[in-house]
Length: 386
Image (cartoon, rainbow, N blue to C red):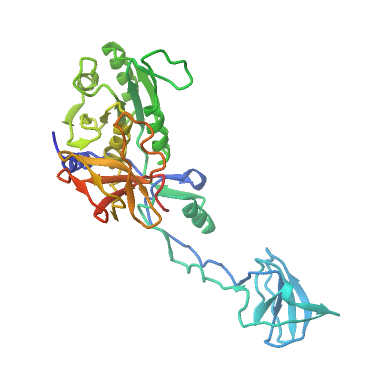
């Protein structure tokens, strides 16, 4: 059995090299940016009005209303000190404008307008948000809705992102049935396939999902089917040492060289990782739901290029534990910035991640986590701030 860090080192040495691709902006959510993006021009592009009102040419009025300019106007106009121009939100500000009086603060009568104005008031100035050449997004950023909106404001319709691997998921077990079917005694619903496919979807990966019973022949057929067009195959269940744990031998028959099988981690000790000469990879995750989650969040995500984000947090309440293996436990991030560790009843528990914000990583030798102790906190990918 190897340590978590040894396993992660092996995984990093077998990351895939996938060409970058250009995708439409509307399809880039969750993708990883392959190049820095800089603003090609000033934002805003021109001085424009932040309010409906009147652009005036001097600090004191009254001013004669001589023109009108609306958003989208393409012909620039100018203004004299004694003049005013009716203006609407987003419209280009006339040259020589002293400031803008908001409509609700202006009094208009017989073609004249009066009101208080401050220099530059209610004007959105050219380049005040970002000058040309400003870094809008950095290479390696996971694109969020705010990223996409900022890129769209720069006029970009496409963006260069890292390519995505083709991923397949194979759940195993005679006792496992799809949600929506009727359960017989001794059966359970398949939650692992949904867990993995949904968290992969956050990265823009649409995984193929299959299930197999604990049959060597059926297992071989499914592996052969899925591996043909996949860079990564993730199996769940059948990876321990019982009589019905058939996955490792089937994967070896399919040409995978097992780089490790068994990690000193809790939960998820039986996890396995293998690669083929053609570069295809395989993760064998235990079938217990919490073990599957930890297997993905700690190990599979590392292969995908998402190195573990780690924050130092303080423990909100004392916790006793049995030392021996490095442990990853669900935790809630409190408004104080501290974390409270959730005591789960076992790796079979499927509700362990509900109402939690991440995992805490506990050193194997620690037997007591005292209140106020520092601990490593790994935020879930769906709860990280943009």
